[in-house]
Structure formats: structure tokens, C-alpha cells
Amino acid sequence: MARNSQEVLTALDTAKTQWYHFKAIIIAGMGFFTDAYDLFSIPAVTKLLGRIYYYTEGAPKPGTLPPNVAAAVNGVALCGTLAGQLFFGWLGDKLGRKRVYGITLMLMVVASIASGLSFGKSPKGVISTLCFFRFWLGFGIGGDYPLSATIMSEYANKKTRGAFIAAVFAMQGFGILGAGIVTLIVSSAFDHAYKAPPYMSNAAGSTVPQADYVWRIILMFGAVPAALTFYYRLKMPETARYTALVARNAKQAAADMSKVLQVDLEAEAEPVSKITHQPNSFGLFSREFARRHGLHLVGTTVTWFLLDIAYYSGNLFQKDIFSAVGWLPPAKEMNAIHEAYRIARATTLIALCGTVPGYWFTVALIDHLGRFFIQLMGFFFMTVFMFALAIPYDYWKERPHRVGFIVMYSLTFFFANFGPNATTFIVPAEIFPARLRSTCHGISAASGKAGAIVGAFGFLYAAQSKNPKETDAGYPPGIGIKDSLIMLGVVNAVGFVFTFLVPEPKGKSLEELTGEIEEEDGETEMQSSSRTVPVQS
Image (cartoon, one colour):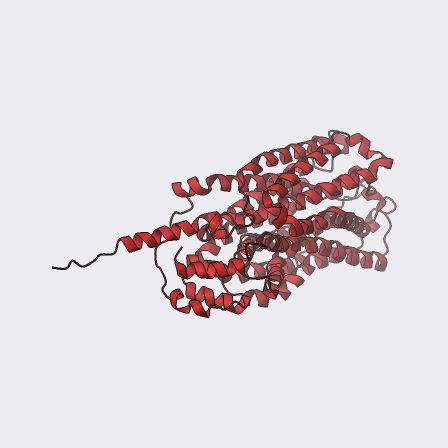
């Protein structure tokens, strides 16, 4: 590598952990707070929407969202996320991380608030506008995946880089708890203020008019933490690695790094000013990229795709699984708001026992155990616990064994987060060249969201009972919870196999991993050897 850029990057790799690193984690992590908040609040919201807008007089069960509507509400944000990951991932490499970073957060704030203000009183009007704003919420969330991961990886030193990127992703844990706590508080307050009988006692009276405010308040509150960090996100400088390696301005990179990381680079001012102007090397669709990183990209995309099939199907339909094993009472035994409260309580307990600790185990151990080991271990135990739930499923449904089911179910989420859910996010931000890093992370993340869409839509239908009389209204018979869990176990086992395509980045600088040191050294040597020397007569 040319000496001017290498001095900047070496200083980054050896910089001590400072306050700015922790500040960057909070600023970058707010997008993931919003992402998880939305994911974990939507199960209770969809139950309320079904009761409020799809109530049928005389029906034996409370109203539920029709299949096409449920698919739209659950899936439209995922579709928006997929589009945002591809678009902003590409834009982050073309324009720089900083230039587009504020846009994604503003989209999330505006769309979160607008989701709660969905217009009209008719089911069609409310659901249509809700889906419209949820798409743009997803679009903003999607942009945050490649940008936040790339920014954190390029700010971090090589010793603790994994922990820093994992900590950004672990902000999802606070989003999960935030969703649960807000839903519990809001639903509890409204349930006490507006008493309503269970559906089986008074079908029409079980859903009070004020229930329409509950889901709106829950959705809008997700904008608050993101809005609080908007100013600080705009003030973040461009990453030194992008400025030095892509923009080819090592002097500016040194100046930016000196401001935020308190690293004195005055001694390098003179060599840094001698900027090289060689064009960037191979592109994304070149043979050279395929030779160097093709299998890596296959590994990151396929493992993230498979992980999200299992992870999102399990999260989005926790309420159905809990009801199936009897942990939640039948819907007809509760009023609308109390059902939202019970769903939030169950999902929050799962999050506290399994999901959130898994994130922080990854933060604590990833730079010791390595990404490869954690991902392999996570897929292995997710497979084991999924089969352990599925094969003796009838045993777990019996009342004395329900607690055991919940413990096992929590462990699958623990090893998802202390496993591939974290590492599939971290590794793509480390192993690709700076000029393609955001794009490749966006492609990997979009593949994951494609898996989430498969999981969300597939599980919605597959998990329906085999008995036509026991399916939810409007759904055809499925393969049942048991066989659906077996399928998810198989998916996790395939993810275990594809993990072997992913390299181990632990302890190496980004430039070592991507080969950019050799690239630029070669360019510099070529430039030197091609200079003409005047011939003396």
C-alpha cells in the first residue's frame, strides 16, 4: 500500500478503545433498535388489527387478519428492507457512508410516526396506508444494515472490531425490550382504563373503541430513540478508510481521524499530501472479484438467507406457537387489549431469557472465540434444539411440560444471537474491499431478508393445522407446527454446512483480509517502473 494511506490505516488498527467508539455504537445502533422494535411489536399489533377491523358478528373466534392482509402487514416492511439494503449499500460505496447515513434514519423516524397515523376508519384504508408507510420504514431500516456495519468496521481497531460491530447489532436487544415494555405499559394502561369483557362473554364489547389508539401509540414510539440520535449522526465524519482508500484523500482521512479518535498524525502531514490517483481495481462483476471473493459472497449470502428463514418465522409467529402449546389462553377468553398485553409479556420473557443475553455473549466473546466458531456453534445448537422441540412435539403440548418447551424455545434464540444472527451481520463488513464493502454487505443482508420473507410467508401458511376445522379463518390446511419446526431444523443444518465457505477475520486488519495492501503496493510499483527517464546524449 502507498505509505501515505498505510500510515492512516495502521493508526486506526492500533488506536486504543476510546469514548468515541462507544458513542459511535449508540449512534449507529439506533437503526437496529428501530428494526427490532418494529419486529417485536408487530405480533401484538396484528392481533389488535384483526380484532378491530375484521370482527365478524356471531363468529366463534375473535377477528383475525385475512391471509393476504396478514402477509402484507408482516411482509411489506421486509420487502422494503430488502430494497433499502441493496440501494443504500450501493450508494454507500458510490457517495460515501456519511452522505447517505442521515437519510436512512430520517426515513425511519418519519415512517414510524406515519405508520401510527394511518388514515381512515375502514379496514382497506387503514391497512393500505399502514403497509405503504411500513414499506418506507423497512427501506430506511434496510439502508442502516450495510452503512452501520461498514462504518463501525472502518472505525474500529483490529483487536476489538468484532465486539464493536456486534455491539451495534446488539442494540436490537434494547429494541426488543423496548417493544415489549412499551406494549406492556400502553396495553396495561388502556386495559385498566377501559374495562372490557372477554370475547366469549360479549363479542362486540370485548374490543373497546379506544383499542384503536393502542397499536398506533406502540408503532409511533419506535421513532423516539432514532430521532434523538439524528443530529449526532449528521455530525459524524466520513470513515478514514473510505476517504483514504476510495476517495484517495489520505490527508483528509488523517484530519478526520485526529478529530474523533484523538490520534495525532501531524508527523504524517507531508507524506499524506502526496496522494496517489490510480484507478480502483476489479469491480463487483469481474472475474478477479469472483476468484478472490466469489465463494465468500456465496457463503455470506446463503448463511444469512437460511438463518433468517428460521429466525424471522420463529419471531413473527411466536404468538401462534405459544397459543398452540397452551402458554397463552385461547383468544376468545380475553378481550382485545388484554390479548396484546399477554402476547407482549410472553415475547418479552423469551427475549429476556434467551434473545438479549445471546447478543451480549457474542459481544463479549467474538474476538476470543472467532466468528467462524460462533456461527458454526450457533447453527449446530439451533438445529439440535429445533429438532428437540419438533420430534416430541406432542409431549411438549401437555400441560406439565410447557415450561420445558419455553426453555428449549428460548435456547434456540439464545444460540441464534450467540451465533449466526450476529456473525452473518459482522463478517460481510470485514472481508470485502473498501470500495465494495457496503455493496457486498447490502447484497448479503438483502439475501437474509429474502429468507425472512420466505420464513414469514411460508410459516404463515405451513404452520396451519392439518385439520381444516382448526385453521385460522381464510387459511388452507398446512403441515402443522410440528412439521414446520422440523423444516426449520433442516434449514439450520444446511446453514451449518455453508458456514465453511466463510473465512475467519479475527485479529486481522481489514486490508489484510481484502488484499488491498498488495493491490496498492502493486499499483505503486507499476507507476514507478513506468516512469520515463531522459536519455543523455
